[in-house]
Image (cartoon, rainbow, N blue to C red; front, top):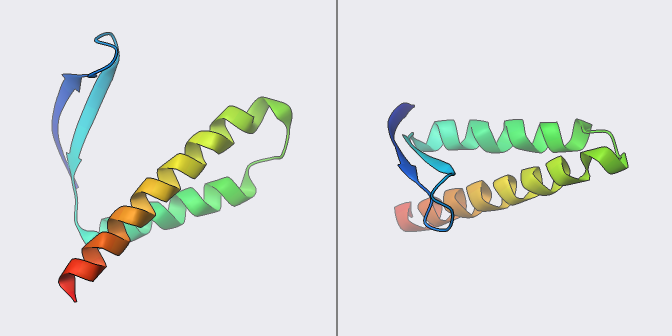
Length: 73
């Protein structure tokens, strides 16, 4: 995994966007870590925003991994 750069967001210039470079094995690891974190997060009202973010992270990472595997085969 390698950090590439930081750039301002397209919607809100006060929010930074981080750009990383990593391989498929690291992507699989991140999907697994995020899935485990989501499953072990307590189901309480204060954690709903975090659960929603984790769901979005897992969805995007999983879709990226599936697209990579389809192109590879």
